[in-house]
Length: 159
Image (cartoon, rainbow, N blue to C red; front, side, top):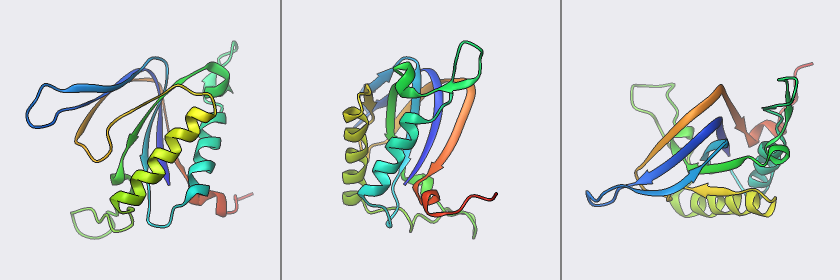
């Protein structure tokens, strides 16, 4: 699983279906926007890894303006939006190849599991709507933007 996380002062996601007025499906104050992609190779352990990593990642400032506080420490809110394009492969040609992205059924299951695991960790979570065209509005704070990949837990760090 891949998670592109952005620290925000506020964010929202809207869905417009059948030319209707856009409906806001999720909205947060200070916290994190998490664009979440699921690959064919992912399972429950990947969701658990990303929830643990994101929840405890120290990317919020302390009183000395250093990155020493986590989303759990600060009570940060989360906006989690499904984003299969995080698995777009652009190495060949001009059109991204999405063959590594999980199919809709499994992707939805793991997306929903991830959201539930964040909630079980005590976090306030807002969401988009799976497999819908969405519009995400955010005010990036910092800006702080990081990419996490659950496959990294299998790789050795250079030392």
